Image (tube, rainbow, N blue to C red; front, side, top):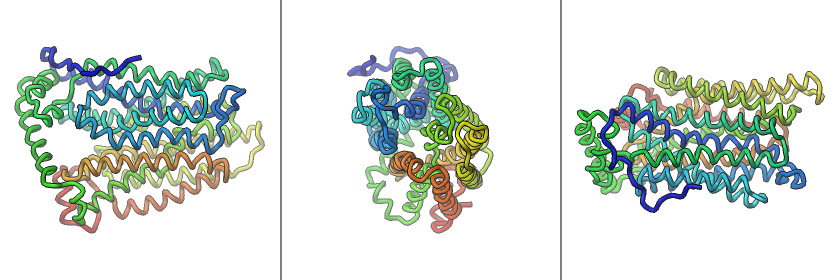
Length: 486
C-alpha cells in the first residue's frame, strides 16, 4: 500500500522543457483519475447494497432501510467535511500534494469498507472515503484549471466531470460482472476492494506530475513557477503567462488584506449572488440524481426484477450518464445557461412523474407484465439521467465557477459545494426509508413536487451568464441588483 512521503519531490526540478501539448495530455490523463476514483467510489455502493442487506449468516451486514441510508449517506457527510477543508489544505500545501495524500486516503477508505466486520466500521470507513471524495471534488478541478492553458481550460475541467460518470459506469459494470461470475456471500467485499485500483494508479501517476505554476506564484516561488511553465508550455509564452499570474494573485491577496470576503456579504448585490450560488447547489441535488446512481438496483428489485437482472440493467444507467455528459460538452458552450437549466428541470419533473405513475400500476411478480413494468421504470430513470447530465449538472458546476465576484469567490464556491454535499446526504439517507415506507409511487411524486418548486425558483432567480466575461457578469449584477440577468 502506498504511503505519502514526508517531503514530496517535484519532478519538474529534474525535467527538461518539453512541448506543452504532449505534457498536458499526460497530466490530464493522470489528474482525471481523481474524478474516475471519485465516480467509482460513489457508484460501487449501488451494487454492493443488495448483498449487504442480507443477514450476517448469508455474508451481509443485515442492513435495514435506515442503516442502508446511513451507510450510503455516511460517505456524503464525509465528503461535506472534505469539501470544507480540502481547498484550504491545497492552498497551504499545494494541489499536487493534496491529490497525493487524497489518493492514499482513498486506498485506506476502500480497504476499510471491503474488510468491515459490522455496520459501525462500515460507516466509519465510508466517512474516511467520503473525506477523500469531497476534498477531491474541490482539489482536482482547481489543479486542472490552474495547469491548463487558457484555450483548453474549460474543456479540461469538464472532462473531469465526464470521468466521474465514467468511474460510475465502471463500478456498475464490475458489480454486474462480479455478481455473475461469483455471486457468493463475499461478492460485495470484492466490489468495494476494487476501488483501490484507480486510487493507487492516481497516486503513482501524480508522483511524476508537476505542481501548478499558479500555486507557486501564490507562495512567491517564481523560479519554480517558471520551471513548471517551461515543462508544460512553449517557451515563448512563459514570461507573459507568468506576469499575468503574478498580477491576478496580487489582486486576490490585496482583496484578502482589505477584509474582503464575509464582510462583502453585507452588500445587497453580493449577498444576492451568494444566495444564487447556494440555490444552484440545492437545485442540483433535490432532483434526486443520486437516488438513481446509488439505489438503481435496489429500486429495480422492488419492482420485482431479480438481483442479477437489476445489476445488469444498472449498467445502462452508467452508459447513458457517460453519453449525456459527453453531449453536455457540446451544448454547454452553445446554449444559454438559463434555458438549458430550465429545460432540464422540466424534463426531470416529467421523468419523475412517469416513474411514479408506472410504480402505481399493479403487476403480479414473475409475470411478463411485472417485467415490462420494471423496464418501463428503468426507461424513466434513463430519461431522468439524460436531462440531469446534459443540462442540470453541467450548468450547476459551470455557473458556480462563473457567478461569484473575486472578493467572495473562495467563500462562495466552498460554501456552495459544502451545501451540495449536505443536501446530497439528506436526500440519500431519506430515499430508502421513503421507498420502504410509502412505496415507489409516493416517493417519486414527492421528488417531482419538490422539483416543480425548484424550477419555479430557478426561473425567477438564476441569471444568464453565457458569452459574458467574469468582469461583465459582476458589473451586470451591480447595476441590476433586483432582477436576473437575461
